Length: 229
Image (cartoon, rainbow, N blue to C red; front, side):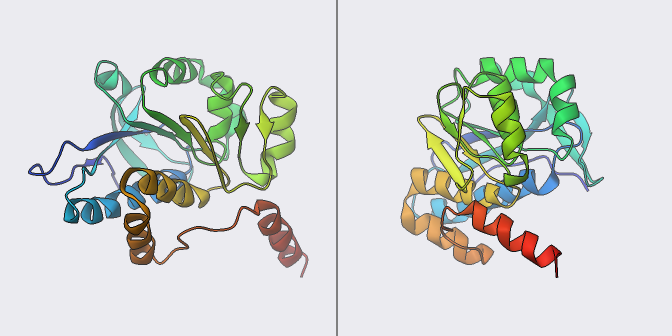
């Protein structure tokens, strides 16, 4: 399976460039859940004469990147976007984030530099660790997967972790909780760009909540109780 990029109809206003930052062992749904939201949003946006999205998946090396689940994603090189305006950077998480942090100095450096010119920088699940490692969350509130919350707080005491939030916006930086919360985050970004009606249309099309309550702790406790049955 290969996923690369899509663009809205060229006759409409200039689309917003969204770059999904790929790396080996990233979580597939972290990436594709958010991608699907923007892909669906293109139709709703263009129907209203609003600029849609040009979606790009890019990595340091370019080429094929294997996800944690084993599916392969086709990517461009991140360096292709160094001199081109990027509206939104989105960084997926990984179940192997401890190893990723140890091996991804170059990726963290690129994120630090690219976020300085991007309109928005966002993370899904443990992708928050990469933003924190780049210093993008210092003095800010953030969200990540509830399973990794205590470790995150030990590693980054300069970041105010909100353990209940599904997603958090702090100026131009957005972070989200575990895995499927990337869909919630992407819907919020779509709402910021195109308004509530557009976001609601996308949610209806995808058969997901338009806005879930910020109560990640509830989801964790609920799942733990089910595991004990």
